[in-house]
Image (cartoon, rainbow, N blue to C red; front, side, top):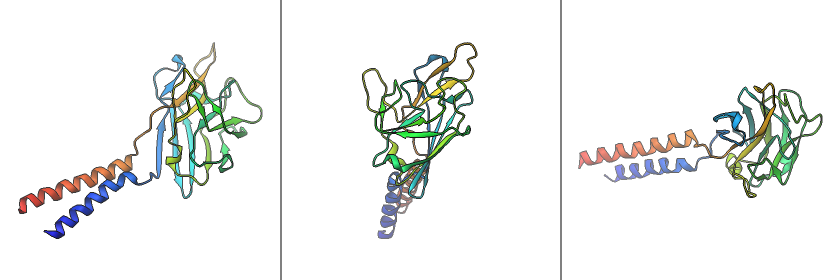
Length: 213
């Protein structure tokens, strides 16, 4: 009886502690825009991969979009707890465009102000065709949870975890540019799978215990 109780407690601890495990990789979906012409979401994906003590970013837009640099916007913007601008390296896209890191006060209206902004550094395009994705870079000395920080909000804006300035490739007569953003955190599938597995094991052991008593 004591052994079963101890086992039950151990399984419960494993299941509950799963929610504290850092995810190895998480995808976030661009789910909001201020440009109605873009249609219903989603508009792309922000993928974060834990690579040792660094986090690799890969920002992939849906096929009808490219990144762009319109006035008052950054190509991509985000927050990072305990992150310094010098930690952000290896910024690349498919076109060979050169980029730099702006910090602080990186903006992407109407989604507020962020700590870091990826900006074009030369031959910048404020219209089509923009910069082909994916946009990729690495942040050293970080974990994925460091980036789950919402933007700060001037009046008339929406809080977001990540935002990008994009060009709509499907428009032939009047170019459409605007910001898209991730405004909702995405659940971590591996975390919830472990948690549910732990709860299932707890229920199984409890059922066996009732039968034996």
